[in-house]
Image (cartoon, rainbow, N blue to C red):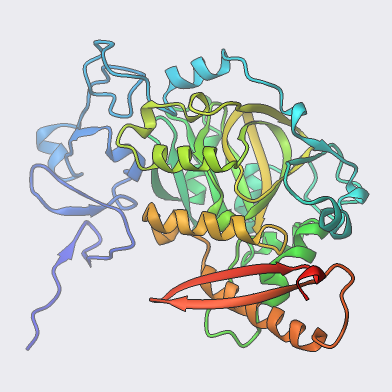
Length: 419
């Protein structure tokens, strides 16, 4: 007979890897955080944990002492000898007091009806675009009165969401209803940020229609087959709920995706860095450095631009742009990611960088290589159909190479002068 699985917690259930648990430092039993009202992000503040049974005899749990406000580990002695770390309250205050070149130097301001696939194919999609009003974008959104409680109603309070403890720049999971309770507290003990609630599989999905440009250019929307062996990636509809002083450090969106981003209410500040060869090399070195959180990446490059995105504004960020985001006031935003044909080389470069940096799967574009193959197959079929026609400026030829299980897509341009 097989031995019965050990049972834990007040609920006497077997171990479940998907649920956060905490060990009692007195009886050494393990408890589900949700059963003993301990959120995962709170557990880091507990020095000695007493379970409900043990705290009757031994008193409440002992909490860690805070020694500083400028380090992810706030128990470090505050002797001023250690640098400020990204996300802490001291860092956010210092960031807000700094001056940066205005993003007006690089942003392309457009009206919604001007942002078309034809325009981007002709002009290129190399610089961020800002659209002050949604008219003409094809973007459908809830009204600006839509609240965090409304999100809970549509998505469901039991939905598990990834929550970032901003001062520690650490990720944890909690039920949406617990985040909503936290959000409406008069005094929030921490700065918590939700930036990865993808809601395509919820009732809220019908309230949001992505911009026409993201729909028409998206590889997933255009090339993902209905009979794919892999599940279709859902990356087009994110709801972002950030409280004042939330901060996301410099990053490139997964797989080199482009991003559409709309502030429903509140305000966000973007810090934007152009994806030049030099800047990308600096970014990769910074990303893999042991003291990454102590170095503000904007100081390592020639120019870091500041872009204030106010309520009702939509921004489109192209492939490879390195950016950080500060939530300057409580904010709800909607956004989505998409791969497309205009920056294939940069998309692949970003993907290869993720591989070298050993980015966890959780933070990568789902089935990136699969979508590349589907696109390649489609382009190859298109080329076969066009081989007897004359293209005015030459033609693109697609080569697909698979070497040691590694995918590369190489596009060569052959002008007529070669023939």
